[in-house]
Image (tube, rainbow, N blue to C red; front, side, top):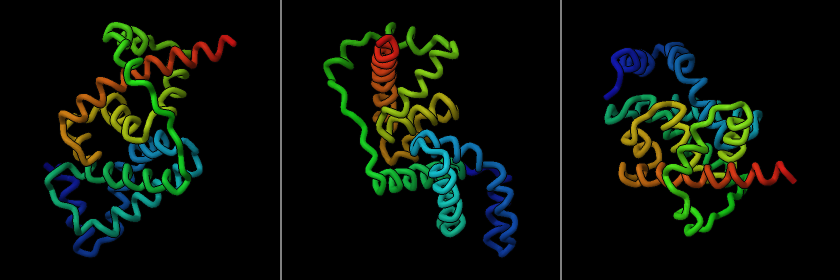
Length: 187
């Protein structure tokens, strides 16, 4: 369901009032940049990818269907654009042993992620960079942007149950990555 004010702006743009797109840009630029920056990891590249996202959104605005919020549609473009950028850059994420992930209890994952100290937040940011783009997107949208699993499923092009499972497992991955980073700092 598209918000009424977004729908009005989209309609104005489609009717030829192209400067109205600046309203959408102003409303969503920081959030799109935040997602893209978490995915690509390099500020200058994130700025470039964010610009590409809005060019694509403007170019394909007539294709927007109100089956989802405009913001979810925009996040999907951002996600796909960032993935294409990462493929060109050939970003690599390291796989993690599934048995190791399964050994992490919910309590362990919750306790490690609940601490909001500056050091823990810095470790969390580093750990996020070691996740796959799909996992980073799910975490960013769910925990930082407060998006529903339905919206995240739309952005990732998957099911709600897949997103729920991904979020459950990524908490455990983050716990393990944080512990690994803590160990590396002690060396």
